[in-house]
Image 1 (cartoon, rainbow, N blue to C red):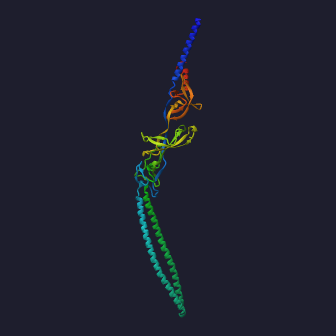
Image 2: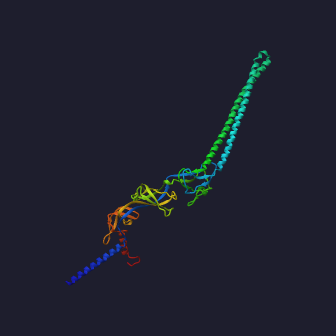
Image 3: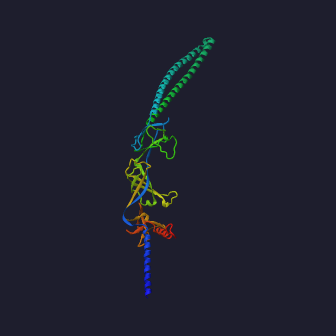
Length: 429
């Protein structure tokens, strides 16, 4: 009986020792998994994104399309200058057009003088022709009177009178033809001179218009952005090549774009947000804007609209993106289209929300779960994720203060088991 009692006591002691060892082993495994407590506090939902500034209204300033070679810039506003509609942004050398104007004015004045001379010559010729016509008609009448006396004179004289009449009529007819020719010639000369004057007048007007166009005005209020001088490369380009902007003294081809005026009141920011973040973004929300080109500056903006999701090539619909348009509440003259900006979209403010680190939420078989700590281990538990925001997950289904694993404990346990079985590298088996 004593031996049986001692054996039973030994079994109980051994069982207690094994249970203690097992408990200590489980605690050791679980202690290797980092955890975090469920927090309860007010949460400001935030969505981070990267965007680009673009101008929705831009006016291009073009060198006047004037034939005759390149144009030289004699005045150009500095990049970043603010202008009003009608202000002169760039001015070209008008000396060639002024020379053309004076040359054409001289041609016009000469043509007008030639018109006056041609009209005077035509008037003199017409007077001379009228005098000759009167004389020729008189000669015909005189010859007709002589022919009427043929019955009273000899046959020879009568024949002479007939010949004289025919000659007078022929001379009259020839003179009438000459008068018509003189009138047509005079009118043609006047027409040619008038055409010369008209052509010279058109050239004068064109030269005046060209001189006027030597000053390029801004059609809108905005910010001046100078284009790169493509001529500086001499027609050769290579990757990474940086071209200088146009500046005073440069030559430019007629019709080339030299600058842009950007309506600063019409600048927007375009960005993309993932479908997971899109639920936290809607029109009217405030946005913090930070530009790489303006270190330390924080600008304020507002979400203008959120477009529908657009799938990307080789990207599943679940990874689609939504386009977001943002307007700036206050413009900064240092901003330029094409600048990259970093955005923080301020979503809803949640009161007394439960939240955990975002990495504490796991997807298992299409469901979102967490691993909550019980007395000695972590157990999987389904959870409802209301929002993901800035590294946290706003959840429902847990209690404040509960501990959740921020690493998958099943993977950690598997790794620990493998290490225990295989032992350290180089250890004897």
